Length: 490
Image (cartoon, rainbow, N blue to C red; front, side, top):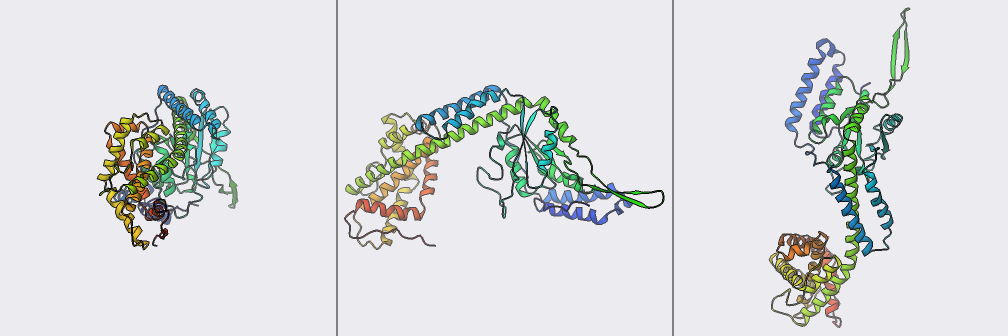
C-alpha cells in the first residue's frame, strides 16, 4: 500500500500532491498507456508550475569551517585565552573546571582516527533502526554513532524562528564530524529550517528512509522535490535513499492445483547507498571533517566563555553605572543650565569611561577617556536623545499631577537617564573587543550603533515610568508629593 503523503513544505507541494493523487488514481492503467510517458508528463507539469510559483529555497550554504591545522590551533589558543581571563575574573566560577576539561581534549581530538557521526531527524523516521544497522558493521566503518532524541516533538503551530539560535536542533550537534539527517519523504517546514542551519555549519547527509512505503510512481516525483529544495545547500552526492526497516510484504503464490497460497515476507534492509557514501567520506575526507568539528568546538568554547565573562563583568559594571547616574543627577539638579549639556552636567565623564574600560580590560589613557566621553555625548545629541528624553520625563512628571517642578529636576532626572544610556552603550562597545581604541581613533559607527541599540532597549515607557520616580526620590527626598509609577496603558 502506498504511503499517504504528508503536507508538503510550500504551496508548490499542493500541485505535487495532486499529481501523486492522479498517479494513485490511475493505478495499473498507467501500464496500458505507457507508464513512463504519463509519469513524465505529470511530473514535468507539476514541476514547471511549482518552479514558477516557488519563491525561495534554502540559501547557498555558508563556507565550511577551515580545515588547515594552523587555523584550528589558533582557534584553540583563542578559546584558551578567553577561558584564562574568565578564570582570573571569576576564579570560583562553577563551570571553570568543566571548561578546562573540554579545552584539554581539543588538541588530542585533532589526531583521533574515529569519526563522530550523529543521526537525527523527526519522530518515527527510523533513526534507531538505522543506527543499529550501522553499529552492527563493526570494523567496516570506523565511527561512533550518536542518535539524538526526536526533533520537532514540542512544536505547536510551528513558525520559522527569527532567533540566532534555534531550538529545532539539539545542543552540540554542530560539534559532530558528520550528521545524518533522516527524512521520510517530502520536507516539512521544521525539517526545512533545521537543514538551513545544519547545511552551513556541519557536513550533512540527508537520507530518505522508508521510501519503500511509496509507490513506484510517487518515488521519483517526491525525490525530485526534495533535491530541488536542497539544491545549493546539500551536495547532491549527500542525498541518499535507504530502507532501514522495510515493511513486510504479502506474497501470493499460484499453486499447480490452481489455488493461491499467501505468505508474509520480510524484505532485507537496504542501506547500501549510505554505506558506500560513508566509506568514500572516511577514505577521502575524514581528517578534514575532524579538523572542522574541532574548530567548531573551539569556537563554541570561546563564545561560551566570552558570554559568561560578559555576564559577570556586566554584574560588576551595573552598580558602577548606577552610582555615576545619581552623581550626574545631583550635579545637574544643583547647577541647572539652560539646555541639558551632557558634559557640563557630568552626565558623561572621562572617568566613567575609564572605570568601565578597566572592567573590560580596555587600556585607555585619561585623554582617550575624555575623547570617548565627548564623542559619546556628541552622538547622543545628534540622535536626538537629549530632547526626546527631556520631553518624556516632563510628560511623566506632569501625569503625576505635580503642579510645581523645580527648575533642575527635569535636568537632573534627564542626566541620570542619559548617564545610564551612556554606560550601557559603553558596555556594548567594550564587549565587542578593542572598542576603546577604535572609538578614540574615530570609529563612530560602532558607538552610534551601540547607542541606538541601548536606547531601543531602555526607551520603553514602563522602564521610564519606574525610573523617573526613583530619580525623583533621590532629588526631592523631602518633597510632600510622592511620585508614583504610572501604570502603562494597555
